[in-house]
Image (cartoon, rainbow, N blue to C red):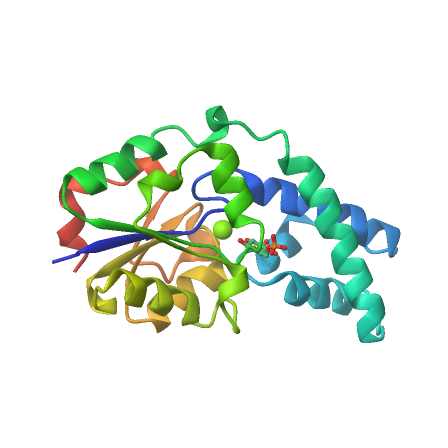
Length: 215
Ligand code: BG6
Ligand code: MG
C-alpha cells in the first residue's frame, strides 16, 4: 500500500517553473545564448549551479567559480523578484484539494523541492500546514536526479521508500524518484517523462481513489 505522497514544488504545485525559465532566459541572453523551451527541460529539477553549468555549456563558455557564483546570484535575484507577487490563487487548480484528500485518506504528505526558495514560495502560497514535512535545496548535497532528496523526505516521514508516491514534472525528478525505489506520477507530457509509472497532464488529474493500482 502507498503510505506517503511526496510533491515536487516548481511545476507541480505552482507554475514557478515558468519564473525559473524566464530568469534563466534573461541571463542566457546577456551571455549571448538563446535558451529554448527544449533546453529548459534539462534545467528542471536540477540545482541552481547545475542549471547554470548546463547553460554555459550550451554557449561553450568557461568561467572561474567566482564569476559563476555571481551569475547564479543574479539569476536568483530576478527569480526572487518574480515570485514575490505570487498569491495562493496561483496554486494549480485542484492541488490544494488533492493534498487535503491525501491527508483524509491517512496518507502522509511531503514537499521535496531542489529549490532553496521553496520555503518562501510555500509561505506565500499559505500551504505549509498541508505537509507533514518539507525538504528543500538547502538540506541536500546532491540534487535530482540523485535520489537523496526523496530518501530524506521518506526518512523524515518514517515511511519506506517503496511505499512512497512522488509527483514530478522534471525528467531529473522522475529519475530521482525511481532511483529512490519509489513510484512516480509524471506531470506534463509523455515525451520527457516517459519513465514515470503514470503520466497526467495536470497534478489534480491524478485519481487518488486508484492510488494503489500504481503498485
Ligand atoms: C527546482 C527547479 O525546483 O529548483 C529548478 O525545477 C531550479 O529549475 C532548482 O533550478 C533550484 O532552485 P533555486 O530556487 O534554489 O535556484
Ligand atoms: Mg519541478
